[in-house]
Amino acid sequence: NHHALFRYIERITHGMVVANLVLLLLISFLPFPTEVFGRFGLSRVGMLYYGATMFLIALAWNMLYQQVLAAHSECAKSGSWWTIIGFTAYPLATALGYFSPLAGVLLVVVLALFYAHPRNIASVVIRPSYPAPDD
Image (spheres, rainbow, N blue to C red):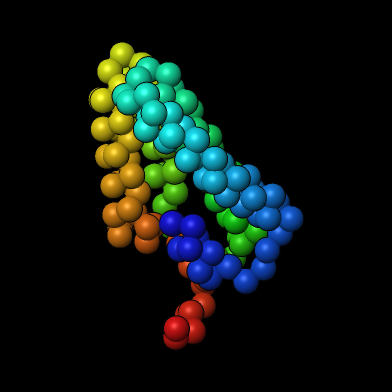
């Protein structure tokens, strides 16, 4: 999704750089809550830690997406409705994981599969109003 978002971008703003750095910082933090699962198994604390991290990543992604949209108003925008799913589903997975860590992890896996689907990756692309050059 990150690559798809930046595919047609021709100019970068300071806000986009900051939002991108926050997103990449949070993604690079992901091994730590994953390690909690590795050491302690499916636990409430591990699920809360992992779910909170995933929610922050979704928040940072939305921040980046909004910066890109603001900087490229001349582009035809694809539907960004799916970015809202992270705001609702990751906290839901976290809350569900508090009561049943396995159910919370399964919901996170379903979200990963959802975001990896080619149609959802294509929906993040901000297409220029002019034809793109051949790759």
